[in-house]
Amino acid sequence: MRFGAFVPQGWRFDLVGIDPARQWDVMSGLASTIDADPNWESLWVYDHFHTTPQPSDQATHEAWTLMAAFAASTARVRLGQMCTCMGYREPTYLAKVAATVDLISGGRLEMGIGGGWYEHEWRAYGYGFPSAGERLGRLREGVEIFRQMWTTGSATLDGKYYQVDGALCHPQPVQTTSESNRIPMWIAGGGEKVTLKIAAQYADYTNFDGTPGQFEAKSAVLQQHCEDVGRDFAEITRSANYNVLMGSPAEIDATVRGVEERYAPYLGTQKAAAAAAAFREQPLVGEPDQIAETLRGLQTVGMDYAICYFPDAAYDDSSMRRFSEEVIPAVS
Image 1: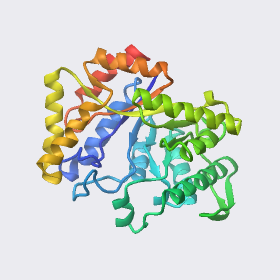
Image 2: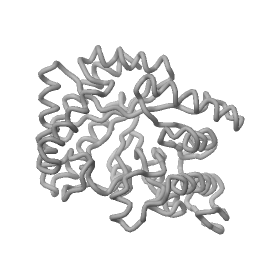
Image 3: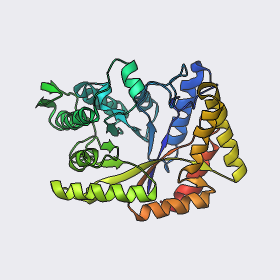
Image 4: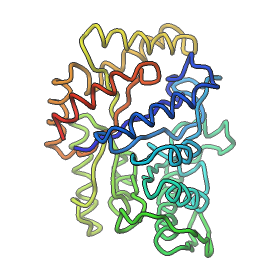
């Protein structure tokens, strides 16, 4: 099994209390820690502009700016977003940005892409909020534009949502990691009728619900879509994101209290308590050996890449370090 780790960027109220002038130092320090540890294959950020589950005045650092910064400040680790919203940037522009970041990083970029969902954010930034059908239609056309620009150097598409005519992409991406896309394409989301069908056609990786029952169900749908389009199901690596609460019951309690305290000024006491308590319901909660056992079980149903979020990482990276030392070797 392969592993990635999220760098806190504020979206989940995970930089609260840290002076904004110091937040880049915190993020880049964690990125350096991940970069220096070969147990972590990749680092990740979210593509959002406002905090969740409640918009606030707390910092949320922009994903692709961070991609460029991490590309320049790290040397080994791969760099991803989970996931970029197609509707926030024109796909021609985004393909060009991605190729540039890939060059800066020496060929370490992953492209996580999805249709988008955070309605408040869409409307606040003036994007409207198109129907799910349109958002997914834009996803489909956008990834076709990516593929053309990264593999041929230009894209032409007379689509329903995007019309491009000879959009150039030079320099080309450095890497040729993906045979079909050059930059590996992660199609995120578990929509069975459309998203997983797009994934069957274009994805190198998928990312959907990581609870055992749901993961198996989504995998079966993806496999059928692969058969329908003549794609080898085994070519697609299936991944999931996990909130990690690791340690003794007392240590887990302390982590949850910290989350609740950071949420409370923005969500109110009751909603903060509920949001913090939800972390306990995730699959990767417990002592390191318990978490390793859960991951081995997930591995048996095809979950080959876990991307881990540690809610206290900006304040204390010991859980992330301990996960690398005790959990990853027991599963990899």
